[in-house]
Length: 333
Image 1 (cartoon, rainbow, N blue to C red):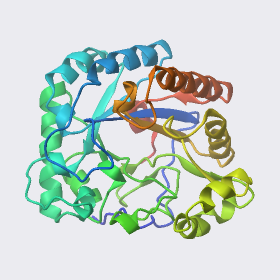
Image 2: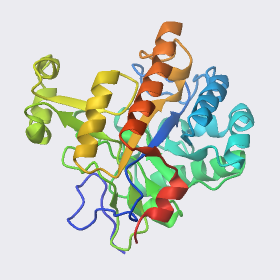
Image 3: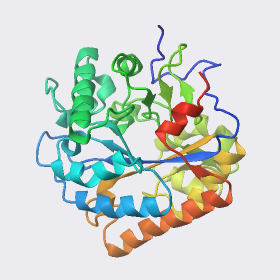
Image 4: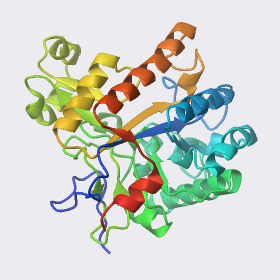
């Protein structure tokens, strides 16, 4: 059974198709993780979970909007009884879903050196990557009482064996691909030529890829995949191109994407016929002071305001929230 090495673009014919009437839909993913110092080297210990009580407010917000968030839990969250107490009622009622997010530096077994390259799980030896995914999968199931179906590599760090491992371990969806991004300079994967639309990782259609929605806007947007790697190597050029309306890379996240840019990104994705928009953010942003995106209560109010406006705009464009369960039932095999 041939699997696609995820850092390589998929072959033609692998695009996923959904039942008539399914799209367009949107999926809200939450990288539910410990409070890491993003500018510090990876470390096994010393990561807080002080923001976890704020998950309850976000869950209530989602329920009021009829959104079923997908929480992608890393190892510290997966071993947290507090996270279980907060999320299990919503999970049991079908008002939330649970998946995996692998940060290798905190996930056993700890057989690799601590360095930037190994912070991308796909760079690890196959057996070690598989063991970490298996341990995280089992811990999430034990803590939350639900067998997870979805995987995301932390730092979007999938590798050549990730698809095979997911199939072997019964995980049906990968969401590790961040199209139009290239982290190879830091030792990570290059996704510059990957599609934004969902696709299959194998010919037998057992593992579905749901890429994070990242699109280009501007006069040069069609040339974006070819231009952006060079632009990233030139400080200040990306911001200048964006200001001039020539080229802007837009990710559907409240972290660093203004509401105006997000609406542009939604319009582009829909105009391009995307059946599914995948949103994301890091859970520590739910409490001020843990990420650079939410530093104070005003930023937190703006964060929730972003979600209100984006969800309202999606509704105005006929984009309905969806769930992993609905996606799996609607995708054509």
